Length: 323
Image 1 (spheres, rainbow, N blue to C red):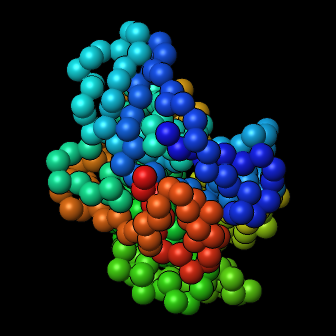
Image 2 (cartoon, rainbow, N blue to C red):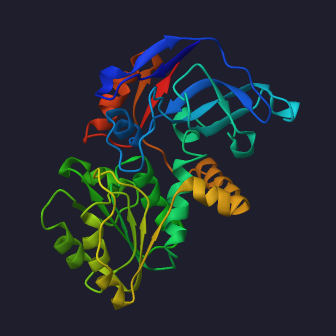
């Protein structure tokens, strides 16, 4: 079978497609035959060797949201899973014809769901939903979603509306994305590349923003704190700027709250609620309430092209790899 790894840090060209033996499911594992892989922007920083979230050692292998069919199970796993179509966040060797996954976190894929929609059930959708809930979003509140044209961002704008938000403000990296985010739930939008983006948000929400979903980090976090309304909540869950969030604590004296979110920490702390998140997102997708945009589908053998697309700031939604 084929898998993709990299043996040095650098641009998309360092990704190598290798021929290796198909893995065997060990105790507490399932083997999935891959149908599609949802790629994630964070892996471009890992590949460059510049991620502020902690750098994996070499050889590196991208993670991914794998959609496929359970081919085999290891000892201790019920045979009833064999033949089921599922999706899972795979942290190691996700770009491959076959992958190993933890059966505890498989998301069943309902009939009639395409690869793009299926790819968000285990990770991107639940992250978008839980970030909003970590911010304590209440009915009719104002929400600011950063990087709203990205995989998680375009889901968060829709889910904010489904969760009862009154006004959803979105930020994007370029003006050509404004209409896209409006079509996916945003009531208003601004470009975070504009020097005065905080002033633009303040004009849209003069009383302040109740909940902010911050995947940018870096210097943007300090501006986000100042945009919060009294009793407003900021949830930090990414660092697309290439830097960890930085902000002084003085802004918190205005009755503002800052918290962080990471999916693996949430799964460990509240596994039953984390599984319920998957169920709720799946129900939204199956009912057509949550739409998934796919920018492009790329053959597994051209994984480098997929990473080029991820790094293109004109991207809208997901980039999929297919065997």
